[in-house]
Length: 136
Length: 136
Image (tube, each protein chain N blue to C red):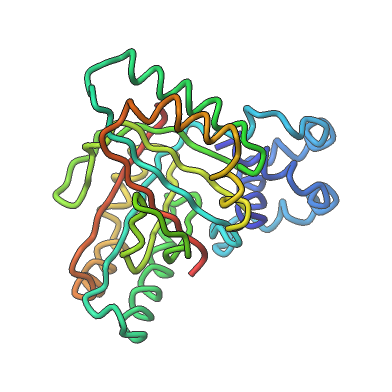
């Protein structure tokens, strides 16, 4: 998870000065908890599940979509090889995005890059489910 | 997202030496992408949706669950106030967990702390959906 950490670190340059201190804080349970974020998790089901071309188009679209500036971090995923009754592994692509807050997510929804993604890619899927979460 | 960044930074002490360099790398799009991770996202629907007590029990359970050592980072969430046709905001609690790989997730499933969580808390929910994702 180095990219994640590096980017986050860069995101707060004041942390550079703290580096000497925080090195010794390793193992602090609280530091594993992500806070003050807006989690936007989208699952896409492709119409043509077996089409590598359609999958490629969706992935290319997500790569472009990831350039929306309010996105802090993102992950493009596929179902893992886990299998239990409660697991839904039927989707084609997972699109997990972190924003700093709801305002940034709202701005993303109307960003021209997002509108273009929907225009270019929405014909590829026949089902999409979105879960938006904020800190409890 | 400071907790996230600090913890990740700590996770790789070699990065301390790089701090001077990476400060200048801000804005690199690639560094927003999370890679080499296993994303485990669980949504719980409480039986008694309006019960603050039951919610409190589940949250307390998740706090204990978060001490499983293979967990790299986690987020405990509730539905955001977004509302569109594709958004499922009917769940009670979102439990988002990052592992380094599938082996760590598998180990988490059989960790005594996880088994105890299921024993103590599974009566609280009437629906649970899990999405496991790995890098595309």
